[in-house]
View 1 (tube, one colour):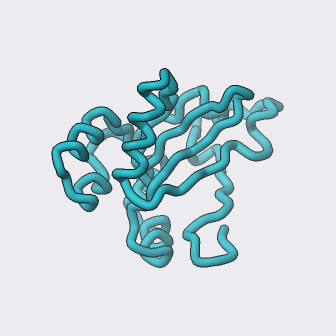
View 2: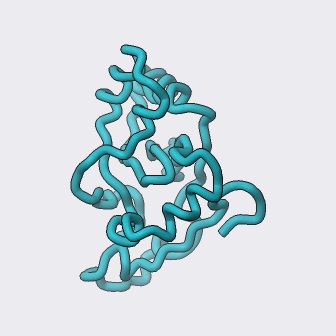
Length: 149
């Protein structure tokens, strides 16, 4: 859902789509805010932040390309989940179109990424478009730390 030019301000997940073999529980993590996202202006800015935090011993628990975003998920000291992301689509219309595509229906989570390999590409002068391109790969598995499954 959105209320402005952002492609999504809120996302609601049908857990039976993400985990068709799962069993519903009363777990608190199943209801409420899952995470807060912070959008960076470029893949380079996201990767610079990843590198700076990594040098300080802070690493993301999940690195994923969702199709609409290139994302890295962290936990803050209180255990809150934070998504640091960069948009992969040129505008909200392109993102909405992707989220209504067969590709998204077939893989709504995305694919895991190698952040260190992307950082190396960035440091070697890779273009923004190549950094934002969705890599081939098997659908990502949502990690237990993410609190959805």
